[in-house]
Length: 218
Image 1 (cartoon, rainbow, N blue to C red):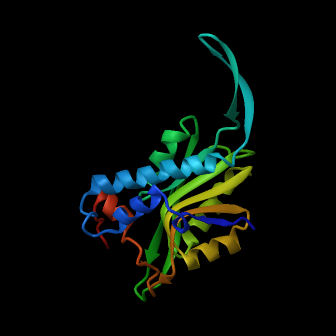
Image 2: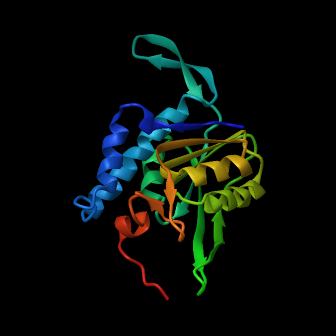
């Protein structure tokens, strides 16, 4: 089973970005909220890049040649719309030659308060022998990520799977590790509590609404 890296256990700028995402006095600034998610995506992209495969290439400079490790193959970066888009953009800033996958997955609520995860749209290149990186700001129950990755795996067998998350619940982390033991988790903060309606506490609220505005609820 792959392990989960919890960045809140050490001091770094990620803690500052997470603090601003959580802060109700800052959340009213949507652009700042999106920008913090983008920066988190960039930092996690750098961290994940250190675990991928490289081969040496020769680069010509104005004064000669030098050998430099170059990533191969390029990864596929996936995200769950819409909340994951700012993190996706940040990761794509660093993995600028990556291919991309997009998934529409959401909670379909019932009158009794229960819900099920529905996946309605998947756009994905072939994944065979390529690193798959999926980003999402929140990992609550873990069911959305698990279902999303299972849908993506219909497009081939990646060489490795990395899940990048801003805030997770411990229950969600445990669920992912049980159902996707081959995936490696990268989490900026892990909260212990999950409410009866499966919201993370203290969490940060609805990341999609905070980034892009409230949606209508039917």
